[in-house]
Image 1 (cartoon, rainbow, N blue to C red):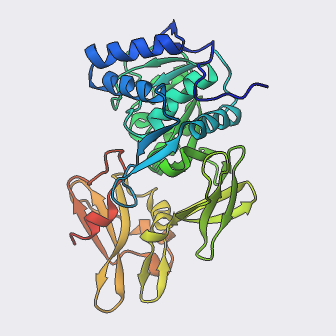
Image 2 (image 1 turned 30 degrees about the vertical axis):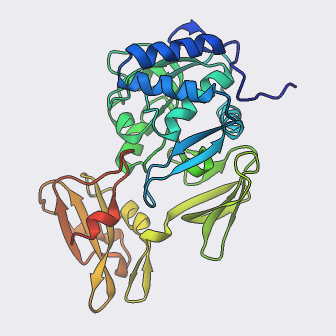
Length: 348
């Protein structure tokens, strides 16, 4: 079989209903840049970058784990990632897809790459928080961030398969999505891995890895990803995981969120899961400096001060109960919608 390279555009590819080849796409890109809205300009810019003479492209990280940075990436690795996604989710040429993510970040760029590599029939709309409003088209495949999924519950009747990524999914959203007929997957990945390297059906505990990926753990129990078709060096993450077998893992939490309270190590994400059934606003737990304990565990809730039923703490172990509760009217977020825990905890 002929190798698919970054110079190929699949002959079944369509954009907003039109069959386009490489030359057509470049022409369309110029008119998007010249006459389009802001989001259309960024699609045009990306497509022209993709079809230029360079074998690489520069990607911007979202800045969740440190300052945002630019990573130079080989275009062929993005093609390999698109092919792995196609295999994992059984995508076929001609499948109808919706593009509703910002092109600035990797998830958006990859949705475009998947479409012309796999031959999808893709429609693009402005990347709003309500992407399915007034849209009655039936889609085989859609990618959204949690906020978009939250606002699209009624529109999902027209979506067969959806991946949700970019920020972690709340338990209440997961519960709502379990009620719809759509096949919904939560994805795991980062810019360094060229979007997702694993996914899990919502309601399931463990992530399954995509083709051509190997996983292991380092001595700190953090996930190590080997993806020779995507990156030359293994990627050592900051994510604490439990390995189920050589192709499945459970995400426990981020190593840099761990709270060391009086010598007891607490993983915020696990405590949040136990509390998620009793708190209906956005919230998180984390550590703030404490003279006696070194760090004390606190609960931070978005919105107005509310009366908390002490019974919600019954599911927690002795050391997991927050020592204090703080309220913030609005959480700080990164551009891609992730909560800036560290910055907010520093203000207490």
